[in-house]
Image (cartoon, rainbow, N blue to C red; front, side):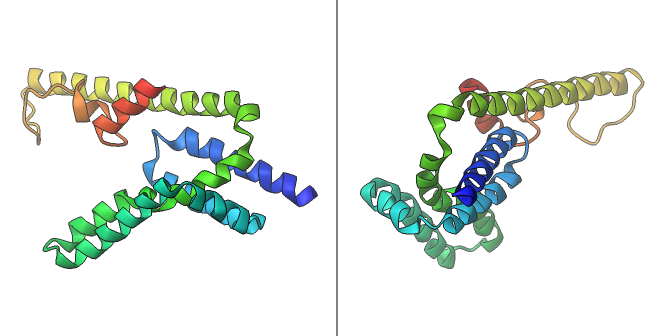
Length: 180
């Protein structure tokens, strides 16, 4: 019983880390979800949780779609782009496996902690992106004033779109900011 509480605490801690890193370190998310899956498998409730997956048959469409994408890689001319795309879509395969482990996280009990972790990660990433954007904006103004040639297209505004979102695609980042 004591191991079970340690595993539950580890699951909660990994989920808090997942929420904190969601907007800052997209590469860490996959590693974190793999660790959550390993904790879930080590927990020993494999049969109980797999029946939860089979109860929600719509969740199985995501890994099936991912496997179809792997199969379509055979017909691709640009293999490196396809592999990058598969890396981006890896969560489609892992997501249905992770969903049942959320049951053991006591979401009602820990919801405030989860929300705080997400908000803290979002706030830190927003501050970093704003400071970086303002730095680049004033650096560009400085370069224009003193005639220093820039390597990128002049007259760009660093406070819009991809210049303001450093860690990920600005569309995803805007979605996280709106959700926060």
